[in-house]
Image 1 (cartoon, one colour):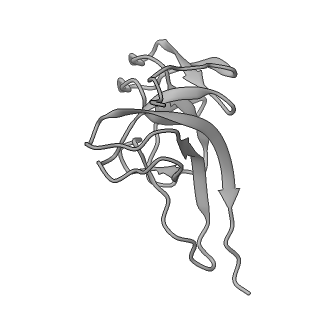
Image 2 (cartoon, helix red, strand yellow):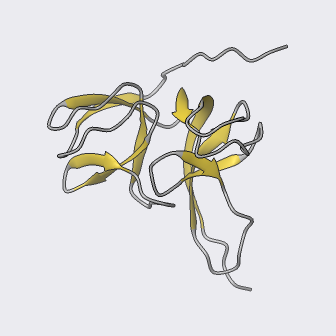
Length: 134
């Protein structure tokens, strides 16, 4: 059975966008009380935009437990991969665990990607994974 590209927004909130527009489907962080596109493996993940966020205006953001369409960083995401934000706020497959390296997961993929900027369904499931040294 094929997975249809649908969103199920269970947990949403509106936030004010900072000084730059943010594309639909990008991971976002709160910085000084306003939203910005997330950087790589960002700790202050607030959710994924459900629409284009225009500078200095409010945007709807999907939070934990929602299924949202997110922009893929590349074509190598597989169904079920745990995801992190890349440097541009797109979702990317999390690296293998490395002792002493913290990863900030944003969720997991319900469908794989075949190209950069493809919208893929993601379950938003933010968590910090510490990978402590033994």
